[in-house]
Amino acid sequence: MLEKRDDDSGIYEMINDDLARITLMVLGLMAAFIYVWKMGFRISNHIRRLASFSNEGQRYFVLPHETLSFLKNHVIYAPLFRTRHNREFQLSRAVNMGTLPSRFHAFILLGIIAMNVVVCVVTVPYKKEENTLAGIIRNRTGTMATVNLIPLVLLAGRNNPLIKLLEVPFDTYNLIHRWLARIVVFETLAHVFAWAIPKSQKIGWSGVGKALGHSNFLLVGLIATCAFVGLMVHSPSPIRHAFYETFLHLHIIMAAVSFGFLWVHLNGLPAQTYLLVAVIFWALERTARLVILLYRNCGRKSTTALVEALPGDAMRITLKMARPWSFQPGQHIYLYIPTVGLWSSHPFSVGWSESEDLITDEKGLPVTRQDVLGTKHTTLSLLVRRRTGFTDKLFRQAEASTSGRLTLRAFAEGPYGSIHSMDSYGTVLLFAGGVGITHQVPFVRHLVQGYADGTVAARRVTLVWIIQSPEHLEWIRPWMTSILAMDRRRDILRITLFVTRPRNTKEIQSPSSTVQMFPGRPNIDTIIGMEVENQVGAMGVLVCGGGGLSDDVRRVCRKRQYKTQVDYIEESFTW
Ligand SMILES: Cc1cc2nc3c(=O)[nH]c(=O)nc-3n(C[C@H](O)[C@H](O)[C@H](O)COP(=O)(O)OP(=O)(O)OC[C@H]3O[C@@H](n4cnc5c(N)ncnc54)[C@H](O)[C@@H]3O)c2cc1C
Ligand SMILES: *[C@@H]1O[C@H](CO)[C@@H](O)[C@H](O)[C@H]1NC(C)=O
Picture 1 (tube, rainbow, N blue to C red):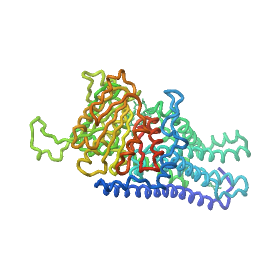
Picture 2: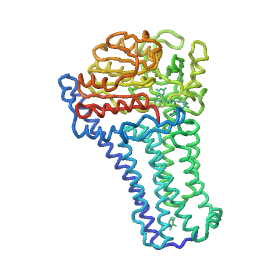
Picture 3: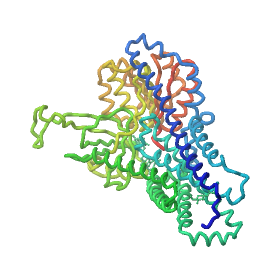
Picture 4: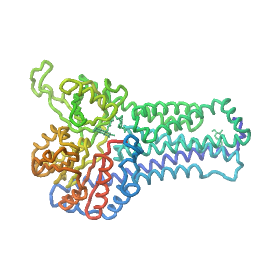
């Protein structure tokens, strides 16, 4: 610790602090830029919606904007390389190597990496004597590793306010979170080596070991470094996806350990403030979760879940909420069922919701509506596919119970998501693969209702659902029955079902001209081509299904960019 203090060291510490602030500012400016960009779209979408109430007005919106089409084709919707983005790289069915970032995401990540490299190497006086030089690099990389923890923690939270503000989904922030973390680990290692290498040249590696043993400051720093490296080592996609629950708990524990030791390491240094800010962000996020959870589920009544096992390894879960809840299409909740998984919460899209007035009092006697005004009773329904963890346990419990139904105490946290509205598109095309239908049903319902009420631009809504077997139709039967009975539904909604593995062709029957069923896989090119030919207003394409389906639809939407106005939006059910 007894280093010869260079006279300039004060200046370099000031520069470090400035550079750290500049880094935060640049990230903030990036967010501000995206805010303005999205605001432009929000305003133009709103104007489009208002201008679309007359059918004639919609003709204008069919035509694309050339520059925007170019950007959408080559930057915004484009995968990094040819067509692959959401389809996972799999070594085998069990080992999932993750996905490639999109071109636009890659741009942003490269920008962040480049900025960090620049900040770590600028204003370093390379001509100085070796020892001072190493000291400056060491202090710079240490400061940068700490300051990057602020955005890293902020972006990892499900209550990150930037999700709503910038209309950027959690998946994207999660991607940036992972890259920031990698940057932090590299900076931490650079910081450690900038100390250890000059030291070893002076007193040998055994001396380095001894120095570590004798200084608390160095030792806690080393432990924090090990924890950071450990966090990186246990986080790659195959491990994360294979043991998600274990991963998550371990991740939180290791993050807490590393932050704790880093706090001691930074005691009294200016960089401690950055760590403090990061910890405050983390605490605020956790508090927000708890408050939401208590607010939603604990009132005079508590939330219960009715779980029904369905054919084809799926469940319908109907949550009777403790409090009224106004729900929007595209939103998801986190579900907690303590008796099935004590510490875990799982995200699920809300497929259906009902708000009904209570018409009986506690004794089961009917009361007048006036009496119960305000005590609305909301149910939210989920469609859940059985996987191998929590969902598997729940499915088995439901299956084992009499009549395949089970009522459990549950907690729902939300709402989250719902960052894209489809209200301004004259033509809406919804693609769903399997259980992805649960994300699309609320949009169908909302648009058909909006059409009948005259509040949305939609004039053509087409739902394309790809299922493996006709028995999967059972998943959404009650919801579909309600939708098919809606006012003026026939004027606007067409449903096309594709059954990829029918047992025999007799199963495949088209119930009516607006609901059609086909065997095999859809030809996305043909389907979108047909919509383009009959397009009213701007077209919005929303996909929720496997990565392969998303990539196919994206490819076709990009191809169509220059001829008509097509927006492509996806939800992948994974991160
Ligand atoms: C925004 C969003 C909406 C979703 N909506 C639905 C839906 O409506 N219906 C549906 O069936 N599924 C939905 N999913 C997927 C669903 O969350 C997972 O299938 C479920 O959590 C798996 O639980 P498990 O313990 O059985 O998983 P496992 O079999 O242990 O793991 C399967 C995969 O699920 C993912 N996963 C597991 N636990 C979590 C978790 N706590 N948080 C996030 N991902 C996890 C992991 O990627 C893992 O690879 C959605 C996912 C997201 C991100
Ligand atoms: C590095 O930071 C430490 C702690 O703030 C300080 O004592 C030292 O002088 C700094 N070294 C240089 C070269 O700036």
